[in-house]
Image (cartoon, rainbow, N blue to C red):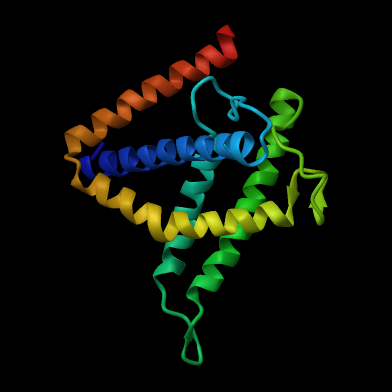
Length: 182
């Protein structure tokens, strides 16, 4: 495999892991601090990650980075961020809907219930959380991802690939533990 391809795969895997972990922290924060429900592991695996956030982040990177770089105007007003926000809301809502069906198929249910929100569909998706994901996605695309990209750009190929490999082994071990042993 060419070194450039190996590096790109390692970068994207690190992004996946970083956003999976940040998603888990966000979910636990909401549960413990905002809603005061107490702590529970908000992921489907043993470790501190919500895979749907990692997958969603990669999908946003792949689908909206090009749009984010464009300079679209309505008269003299830059409207690119508005289109990016709408794109984030649409993409994250579809990802969440698909994730709920996958979780229901594999585990008999999904980890959230939006029935208390207006404009919900089967408690799987709702307008309020979709807008929150849009806001979070803007923070992600315009603030966090540029920082993470700078971080991975500063890493040598060797360090980047080894870090990704270690995290991949740990993640694979967690999957085996969660689904085969536990």
